[in-house]
Length: 259
Ligand SMILES: Nc1ncnc2c1ncn2[C@@H]1O[C@H](COP(=O)(O)OP(=O)(O)OP(=O)(O)O)[C@@H](O)[C@H]1O
Ligand SMILES: [Mg+2]
Image (cartoon, rainbow, N blue to C red; front, side, top):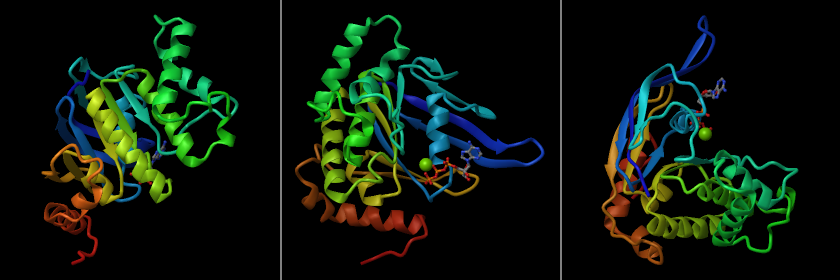
């Protein structure tokens, strides 16, 4: 299942009333059910804060976040987030870390939860590592655990915060492809934050550009590249549409445009 998300006039600041740091200023956008939307913007501009607000795990100052189920007022299992820094508990095994994501669903027995967790561990390619601890895993494996933990709750909306940013190029390519295949079969709505323009184009239906401090949406680009895209990366990255989008995005982000 998938759901739409509407963000309306979202504002968020940190700090005290006397000394506030405005981070999000009047952020508004809509995502349709099943859409894959990428968000790009400069470092420190408020991307993580935006995703945490949508996940209902930080308080906002004003504005509204509404999904197909109604307003978001706190964390729920309809929305799951994959964190930039994995957020695994070092004293728990891979299996326990994934089961942890299911604790929010009280109607499920421990045995059922473990069964679901094992299935997702297998799906993300970690079968055999169930009893390993995070310290025994590579970065790519840790991110797979984070992904399994988020997907195990069967979310309608998946928020991904630079999930592949710290991985080597080969692992990143592989995980991008696997994500596209998963999205194709699960039909989840995905909001994917990245600072990698090529990654955004390869994955998304639409790309939102956000500006720095306070953050607001400054541009929006449709990605008119045929799907499915996996297995065609070289062709896609060599296409005119890819280059055209890449240059427009670079320009919008204040980067040099290459020919
Ligand atoms: N809990 C917090 N308390 C105070 N300030 C915070 C907090 N979290 C973030 N900030 C500040 O808010 C701003 C936006 O942070 P955020 O992490 O949302 O940016 P980001 O776009 O995700 O950055 P990056 O690209 O480095 O991941 C930064 O200036 C940061 O210092
Ligand atoms: Mg961030």
